[in-house]
Image 1 (cartoon, rainbow, N blue to C red):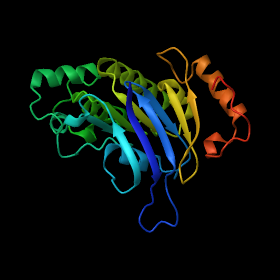
Image 2 (image 1 turned 45 degrees about the horizontal axis):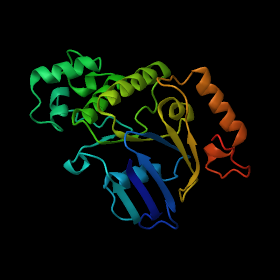
Image 3 (image 1 turned 60 degrees about the vertical axis):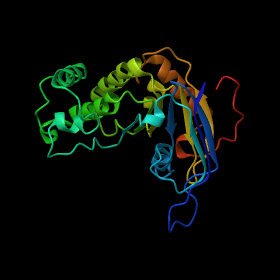
Length: 252
């Protein structure tokens, strides 16, 4: 079942000389995980804000047919954890679930590897630990739609890999329809069911690539490496946001 349809004819920021996005169209099935990859400044974060309903100033439509989404079950994880430094971990989590009891809270923190941190303040936690709190906050409401705006950026590889595994574990319980924005193609291939490559601004889809590899995956898996090398050999201009001049093979 189609869970999310995005059809943006144009998006232009006030004062900009040209459009940021459009025309750009894609659809997601219920529970599908799609990664969006493209160069800096291509409008990927703007796209997530439009999908989330945070930016209504565009021409086009975003349609969501996700059970529970009308009840506000939208999870959004940003590039920075965005934890309020004057609140404890527990109070940051209760911002999205005020009635969260202590027992449930402690069990949830233990599940994400943060046992005993409920009364700590965010600045006392490492960057990786803060990202775990941010992921947990997004999943506490059991989101129907999950938006991820480069949530693993600037992390070392072992920390990022541990968070990939945590994300996969949390998704198994809820299976939200998921959109990830990332600059990291290996990350996209390790996590997603499909990778949408977007052009330089104004962003449009220049390749929709299915990742038909068994899960779970790691970014250093041989199969991921082979797919990465094949994509770069076939479409060397993709990560720069340029359209390939070569015909796309049927398998992609």
